[in-house]
Image (cartoon, rainbow, N blue to C red; front, side):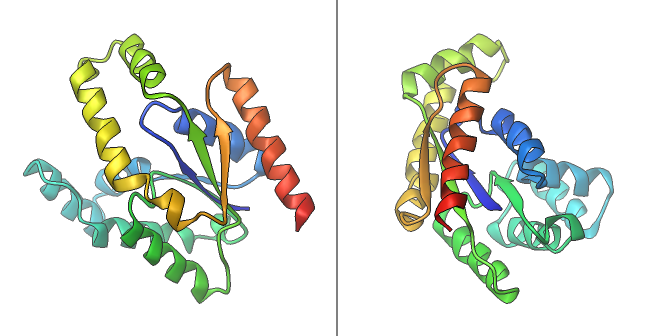
Length: 186
């Protein structure tokens, strides 16, 4: 399966990505992990990302796109993957479509993890991280609504919405049941 996970910060995408990756037998590809890997391995892209981050700037789509393109070309991702943190915007979604089309592929589904903003704020405040202040969390939610949420319209035919409130296992079961019914339809 070729999947993209979408949801606001704090919806549990990273946690669910790990579970779903194991259950579906596909690699979990996180842009954050890609950045860290390239930086620690001091690849050309990693050095470029590090200098951008050192300046306090955002990594441009062109670099993120290239990292993802290279990762999707690796042998373990040929038959499927689970993307977490990419695409973040419609321009990146266009690029992802181009990458997949080269090999005659398309996404199977976009799994949306739905959770009320106040629940997300509570969850993130409970983590106790120093950068998890309510105003910062609400700002991240606004950035998600402005930049990433439009993907739900872009991928409207592929979106499967999952209630992301509850225990980790309950949410995983909802996601797997929805994906299994999608498989059964095909």
